[in-house]
Length: 332
Image (cartoon, rainbow, N blue to C red):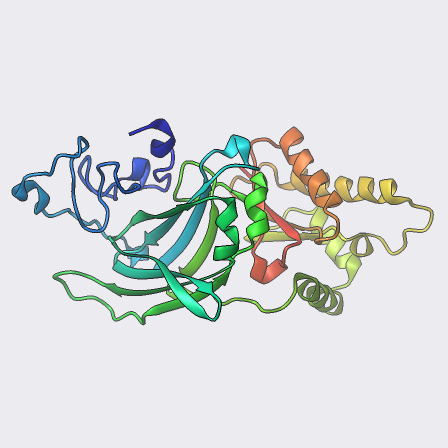
């Protein structure tokens, strides 16, 4: 197995180097067809020689976890050459983070119909290679759907409704390296689209990010005065997540006499004050709401994190809660 393929095998606890939790060496690994690893229910040796019947039929021990009783599944997209993001091709994987076998059908929208791109059976707590594609094919996956059924073999299990989820893939993200983030399933950064989380299917939001951001800001102003929010920002909280709205109208009553550089400097000052207040609280999560805009404040925050807080982990905050205009930082 080459180093590029090896680095894409899981990083989640129990998924190290692509092995299923509790499985024996060499079992439960997933990879692209032709690498001599398990695909579509058929075992082959690393030298492409068929395994003996007794070896092929040897049962694989499946270690179940309490949280695995609720199904979490996602599609993961990875660049094949992250150093050349403008020209690289990509790989797609289906991730099954549950105690169930999942039989899935991955489709893309074509004219007014659907086209199956991959069907496969995924064992519990594993992932399988779906397809490889280049930038000329990105338009084909702007609208995709996945349907799947869940079951267990040779044991009783809780009934699960069949999954059927449609997704809009933001193909612009494939041109931006920062779109690919640290995740639970791969050692390399990946663009993750969840299909289901803890038995709840992902629902597509059919509102614009701008409308969502405006609605959130109006609700925030109605429910809590700006001055109260500033006091809460400056003091460490025991809450699980601390939200910090960096919109200048949430930080100051007036910006009279301030130019754009002054405003940005004040916003970054509040950002650093919040980081310093929680820097000793390992695992603390902070959400900085900066808005979509032209990205100046967001990029300034990214630069501050790299320069002053390199050990902290950052990612885009939940789209459902914050739209496209928020960054979540986890204190490490």
